[in-house]
Image 1 (cartoon, rainbow, N blue to C red):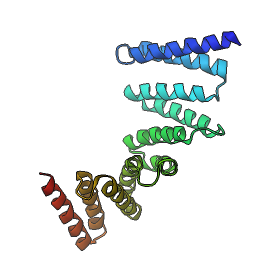
Image 2 (cartoon, rainbow, N blue to C red; image 1 turned 180 degrees about the horizontal axis):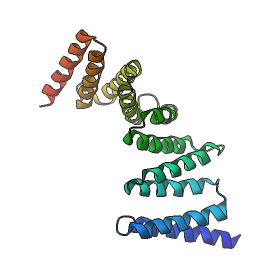
Image 3 (tube, rainbow, N blue to C red; image 1 turned 120 degrees about the vertical axis):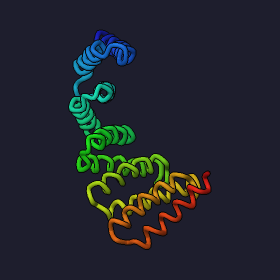
Image 4 (cartoon, one colour; image 1 turned 60 degrees about the vertical axis):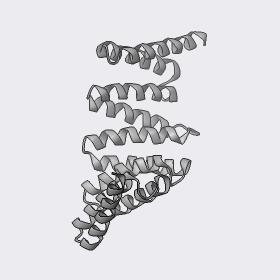
Length: 212
């Protein structure tokens, strides 16, 4: 038992070294991360939540190296561990889902990103309330996914939710409100709802003028 615990401590030291080397010597950092992951999988079991944590770190490292397929595989594996772990803090699932969704978003894989953003959104709404800024942050990505894939009704609903959160937390004249109104105007124009588009644009311009 003591031998196992000592190995976990060795793995943690390897993780710290990997983080130090990640920008200076990526090859060494990768090797250290893999050594730490192998130790924790062997000592704690491949389905342990601690293993999911180091998978997060290695996935983030691969993302920084633009090795997207490897980052995807690790975040997916970490998410499966977390989804199978009873009693887990749901925020960890939300964060893991968001990381994977952001990767898909950056790769223009919007259909893959949407269910993950939706899961993260549902959890954050439950944990923090529907008007929390973190909720609006996830909505921002969902909006772009819906708009890009032509789901204009969903995009409109989501932009309006974002606008309401921004106005509540920052006031109706915040620059982010103008940004949301601009996106809404674009949706209205695509649906030939020209009067609504003009109204949204005028309000957005007014906010921008006030900010000068």
